[in-house]
Length: 299
Image (cartoon, rainbow, N blue to C red; front, side, top):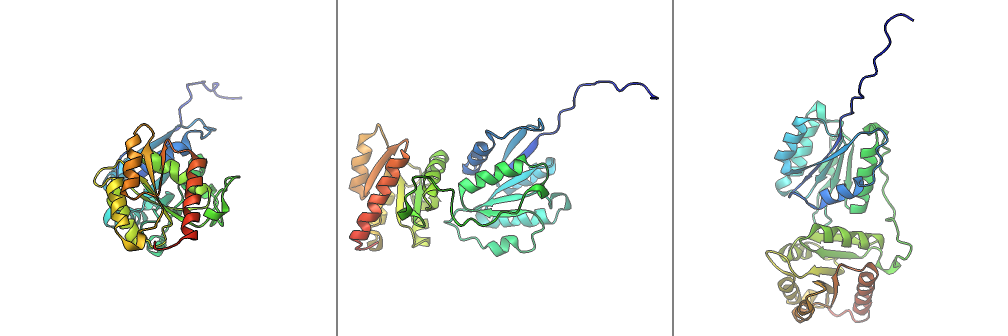
């Protein structure tokens, strides 16, 4: 009725949803978590999802200025308070105030949550579990609008493994490895058993974490790392009287038999081989903690 029929032109693709990951180095741990979260994300509206990694806040600011982002994953452990400065800058820009931020912090860094949430005008979630970060990334990137996302409620317990060992719940492990994929895999195993996880990327960072956190119950120590390897770090820990009996499980290459002997000689309590078998790892952690409880001594 009136007017020419509408022409059937080619469908115009919707712009991709962009996820911005801001961390200290390219191809880092949070980018790996984001890739894992989005790997099986359904594309119900036909829109592609693009992950953009920004190394530091300057690259992040340039990316945000270049175009809109659907969600931002932020490493709170960036040096010199850079993460907090980025959040403040975003809160001062009306165009960025609605961008939800999933902020991840390592439990090895004591970040004041009040400083992050004070005066915030945006959806802001502070997460320390990589598994929970993965879930929230998938949820945000599958939602049409940030307001469609229900506020996150605090978890009373992690997503339990059916075979979880209740004796490990609430215990704290320090995972030391320079390979983000190993950190991600081992952290996921431990969190399923209710353990708290600290992370360090080399032996020197492990010593710093140990000095900051007296509650560490077990250390999983990779042996081959830059700056300070696992042998040196293990020997340094064993030289501290207060940690002479702290369980240290070396993570060695399966083909390198000499790594095991060298790790034990440096003071490791036990060892596991890569790729890590979840049941074997949990069993060895349980055995070490049980042995320590029966004969506590120091550490």
